[in-house]
Length: 225
Image (cartoon, rainbow, N blue to C red):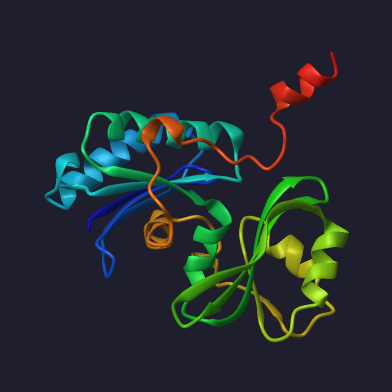
């Protein structure tokens, strides 16, 4: 089954095509442009380079959160548009679970952490063991203290992935069993999204939505009116 992954939840824009065993092709760009300017041309070029068209794709996977509110909406809107015109599945994948697939060949507990705001993180805990990934700490918003308390209760090796690796490593500097993933494995990538999608149930395009884990700015503003 050919899976197209689209990742727009953070600082990278990424697209990949995988067949469950191999990465057929992948593009990753650390971009200063908005994902709306980058992702669709990237997908088009990737498919052309792989000698494929959208009609060859069996499933489209997209990061559905947590992450950048705007980035998530761009990726999800793009996938909805593609899938509504094609006979292919789509599925939303946890950004944090997909990040854990970056280092799934290791053995230990992955702390997938993204910066939400000052001293607040999006955090998920995943056990990895030579290719398998199992959620052991459901995705949530937590404070720096809550993150540290969870990490201190983990036996065995701990691997940090996400856009705030250095910050979290500093927070856990007194724990000798903690290390950051290599730089190439720290940020979101669409190929990991594709492999994570094999564990996810498909979703009708009209029901594909973002899991922000906290209220958007518009929702917060509305509450304070």
